[in-house]
Amino acid sequence: MASIYRVQVHTRNKVTIQFDHQGRHGAIIAKKYWDQGKGCPVAVVNGEDPALFIAGFEYLPEGQSEYDFAGAIKGEAVEIHPGPETGLPIPVHTEIVLEGMLLPDVTLPEGPFGEFTGYYASEARPSPVMEVSAIHYRNDPILFGSPPMKPPRFHFGLPFRAASIWSNLQAAGVSDIVGAWQHVAQLMTVIALKQRYAGHAKRAALIAAANSYMGRIVVVVDEDVDPSDLADVMWAIATRCEPSESIDIIRDAWSSALDPRIPAERRLIGATSHSKMIIDACKPFAWLSQFPATSAMTHEDTRVIEQKWRSKLVNG
Image 1 (cartoon, rainbow, N blue to C red):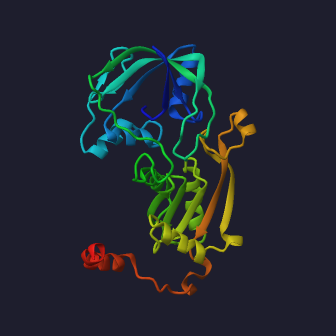
Image 2 (cartoon, rainbow, N blue to C red):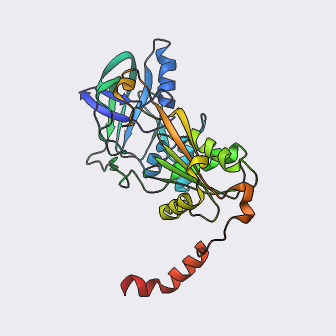
């Protein structure tokens, strides 16, 4: 298992690893060791291939390999070597690696830290301690920087998690999905589909909401709306969504300790859930054929015109 977790240096050989909620695969694996009174072997990799960063950022199903995912992005296998201390598979082409054990029943205060939401959302709180037994490094390391800043200055611009949600929808048997995108650094998910039956849009929205990490807003639109174009999405919301009929609230859903809107009293008890709003911005299925025809150009027509006149418009 490979993922992205915050690491804070405390002493010469002690760092903390932050799990923002206990559903993280890393937290689940560590607890299996701790329940046996054992330390959990761990390797912290710095300066890795960007494909590995993206793979670690994804929420792959349990049992799926992040190394395989990274290899698919790169178009070639990721070369690995067993760590001398832990035996864990470590990417060969990396800059700095810490090896050691994540200790049971040992914590140090971690944070605060500026997050991708644009806030210092979580105060200092106890996090498990890794006792470092070895450091492997190259001289003059080149580190891949990715500061988690306020959207849109996020880790990266491509909505890979939207692709994962699309896969979740297909795996659940939801047909005719034609697009998926995430805005505001994944906090708003938009699904585009071709409606086939009553309840189709709601079914897709519920599955997307269940798989939208920290996202409070899920929007479903018709196939003529570009989910990556926020103006197009807002047009659908403003003209096809009847608020009294087309908005649902899902309570106690998947979020994180990094969520700035979780109240202080709930943080104290370790709450990492919030509500999610589902907006059905599709034409009403019951009178789909009677819905007014649009006067807008299709996306294909728009692209043809842009390509034809781009040189005149951009520099003219």
